[in-house]
Length: 111
Image (cartoon, rainbow, N blue to C red; front, top):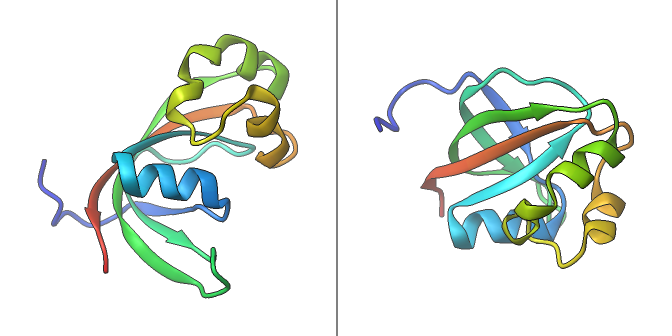
């Protein structure tokens, strides 16, 4: 995949567990409250207190659910790819109203 293509948007990772998993393993499943455009994205964070770009990735919508609870119930098999140890921990770190499930693949890591 050509990582030189222009990013379509930005995705923020401000939860250390998910960010660390993405940077170490090269992918992460994340739940979000809003629908995002799929494609190339710039990965941003403020973990550590400083806003910065950490890489470039590819964002894919996996599913849209009626509620966070339904998302968790139907996505339990993906828990090992979230950076969290339990569904409760994943839910506790999610934004309120999260019902969109995405996969983010790390294409290029900065610094």
